[in-house]
Image (tube, rainbow, N blue to C red):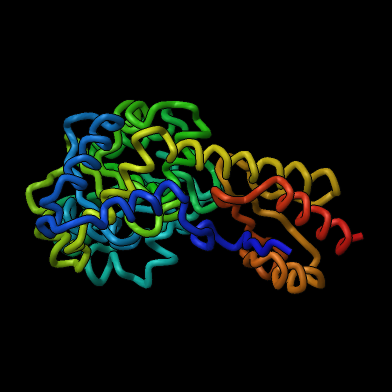
Length: 341
């Protein structure tokens, strides 16, 4: 039986075209630390979809991208406002606070998404030396609940941030899934949305490893290279990270894989709803949240590898990866149907 896991899109393997790109990059000697043709080519591809007025730095992983970004655009006495469920708040072992030196200000949300009304009460204490100074509003796109900010919702947050001298940061571990869902260009999402800084995810979307810090025109970039080095995120053999981005970006593979994962999540949500299982959040990217009877969660999780999100409620998280097939979805739905009767 084909073994798949719905626990995370990090559980999936590497897309064959990405693996082929890594092998092609493994020829001969080139300069280290990004001074190579592969990195230059990847930068050109990023600029072709995001615009020329960006600064880019590749990192090993998502936590590294977020930490490098926040350490670059913040000073140690400044704060970052984020959703209570945000990855930087819950799943990065306080790395932004310890390494970037920023204070995180978590905000409760019903669906993982910040709004101006939720953020506004935290925009206080400006100029008061006893308070950490608000500097960044950080959103996850897509959110940890799989919900997606529209461009208008991003713009509303950006306008609020810029009015108070703050910046808007997007943790884009699933940026591709959000772009695919909105059917917009990434440039439209960032520029029309007023985004200042982006952590561009690759690992969850078919790459072996690697993310990109992208600073747009409004974000200070003069210290980016030094911060990345100090944070331990400068790859010596960077061509192997860069080659993966080229493979993903040059022919639109990054959107193809993301759109497929989104489609599989929608198929899963429809299948679960059809057998009477409660789906608790709108399915807009590649994550499905559903409530299952406590007695069936463990045996199903042992077979399909998913995690419990809220034990008291019996809410589980199911993530569709780029390589999930329709028959994998149908097998999961059938197993849930049999388990819940």
